[in-house]
Length: 358
Image 1 (cartoon, one colour):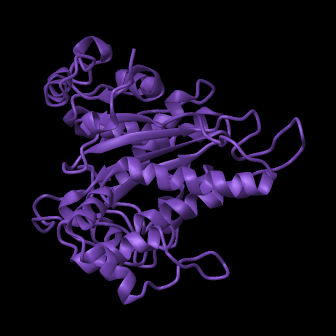
Image 2 (cartoon, rainbow, N blue to C red):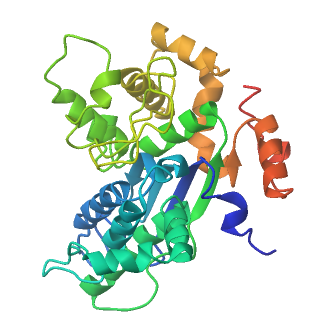
């Protein structure tokens, strides 16, 4: 059976949310310690995190959360063509030349583009339109991640050839319930893989970065983290999208970020960062059979508001990667996506845990 073209699923011209997984092809680890050779590849985790942070400052794509595991990585992305549309032609050219510079410094970082290099893109309308579209394309984000890490790893291992398995796996997240379940699934991956015991010890995850920044927060007199998340004081997680979305107080429109670290200031869940982290901690306890946890009373409304109950919520999170192959959402949202893509693989029978029914 032929594979569905990415352009049929991921449309760079539409705001969409995706869960992408890229897996290493070799027996040797992407990160961690290879017990066959005794070599440690832990430093590669920082390679990937730094690369993701760099791409967040260039692309019109919001990184919602991520996790770097031993032989694969997870990333949850939201494309923002509405943000890219606000960029001037020259800014589009400058951002593209940061990705693919004509000249590099001795340390490998891109040189500042010259005006003739910028004009080569700006003065060609077809090329400019293509570059603008690619800057909100999730496939180009993953390409720029995978190729950079593969080249560095091959150079370090003194070898050539494939480093990653084929093309990356992509899931479309169609509603808030599936997005919340996916974010929890990604942030809890190191715990489920027995690499860490708690979210605050799960290195190289979005949750860990947020917790580190939260622990360094100076002004704790106000419990709300809404404004703090949008400030420039988040040292480690400031390149990721804020968690809380507030339709009443957030400005209407693309919410373009001025710091240059990320595409926008728009959140992605209707709960605060502190509530999300509490829910994450509770869910992690339920997924570990040797731990006894009790549902905090203030978390019940969060699950109830999304139409979820506690046992089914844990089942969804623990089986998220296996159940939702190409898209996650309610049967109704899956049906709408099937019509949009012109595909029959998006149907209710592929959603046996149907988020609308639990």
